[in-house]
Image (cartoon, rainbow, N blue to C red; front, side, top):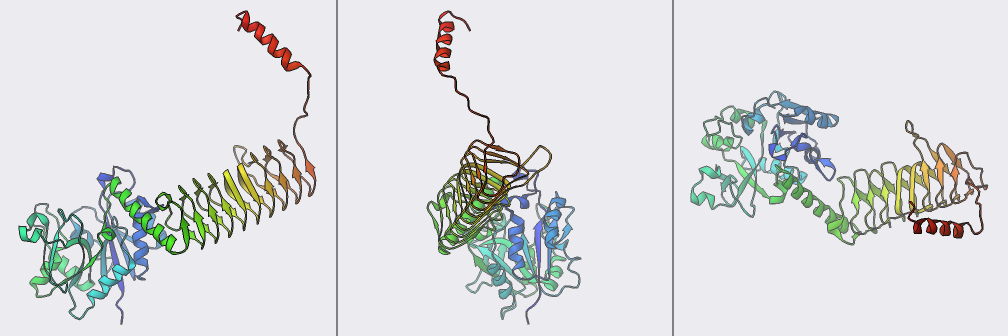
Length: 452
């Protein structure tokens, strides 16, 4: 029978090195708070309970996790990792199962690694705790894990307390741990704070269990998976790792990236097959791209849906609520916001479509603007199927252009246009023969006399 799982996520630290008013664990990776990346991995295990331990700026963390149904508890004083975990004991009252202890600023841990920790906890030797270890390129000042070939831990030691032989060990402690609830809180109750910092350290439970004759175990993972974030520079490095992995996955799934290192994805970007993405394309959250779509260079897409066979950019901007239909074309310097571009419709150049519905097969000429805002309210524009909007036109919403209608170039349309009608709304052109020559002659004469 599978034991229920609970997760305790520590997020009480002030994160002073971030130099930010935003809580450290809420700084985004791929457009989503790093804490929520971790909670996604936890959710994949279908936990019975998930508890986030907060501290400074805890109200920010509470607001971020409340929509997920995740509980929070407060660590009023930061007295070490062991003390932080103990704050969740009351919230787990009556829980009998396995507990994962994780860190909100270590966001890239995968569900598979968390599952491996639980599986090791239930191996035949029944370890008291399972520690997640890693081997960084530079072990530096990380705490060391001394273990045998089977991962049974003989000793865990902080770097400052380690002997030269122990410092030569490359297996380091990530801080992540799994234990049975009954073992975890029983051992934590015995952890003391007789150390230089006067804090209660979570890893001490391993040696306390050893004193009881119970071994703990370590499993290993890649150093990048347990990289933590304590500064803006580390956040940027984590972002780069996430993006590199996402690009690889995109290409594996049948997407062509012309210059992979220049494309930036959001955490939830969805891409179809045979999509081609040119250099310097940025995806914000909420984007779905269909099959056989071409996205040209320097386009920015957020909160938008692009259907099969569409062609986007270069230098296009699709804002939230944009919907591009099958085979439609959004050209250079075209911006869409809360707008639908129908099947096969085209907006090729220098156009703004806001709060607009464009029917199938319509053509939007260069420089067309839908004037959707009067300074107080937003209004909609509707352009019918097969309509043709001439270049440099302004459609002042609310307004409708019927199916098959034509709007002459340079028009300012303020009233509805019937289907298949021609609408021309511009001043009449006058011509004064010889006026330009006379003007130039008069102005040159003034200049020669030194007149302004």
